[in-house]
Amino acid sequence: MRKKKRNGSKRYGRTWRKVRNEYIKYHPFCEMCLTAEASEVHHIIPISEGGKHDKSNIMAVCRECHDEIHRRMREEKKNDGR
Image (cartoon, rainbow, N blue to C red; front, side, top):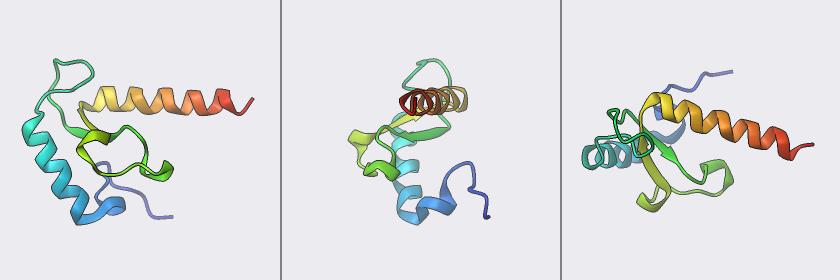
């Protein structure tokens, strides 16, 4: 099994990198905590659930907030399976 790079470049490709880099350029701070420097871009509606790379579906986040978002998503998915 091939491991996905942290920045998602293996999974999303060149188009995503361009969208991501442009978005971070104009949104340099985490849109969740509003204090840390944004280092990642999160899809609000995951690509796997039909989300797109549109600016209306992404947000700039720091690594800590991004990890927290995904932790909550895993928890919700786990609770929905009961």
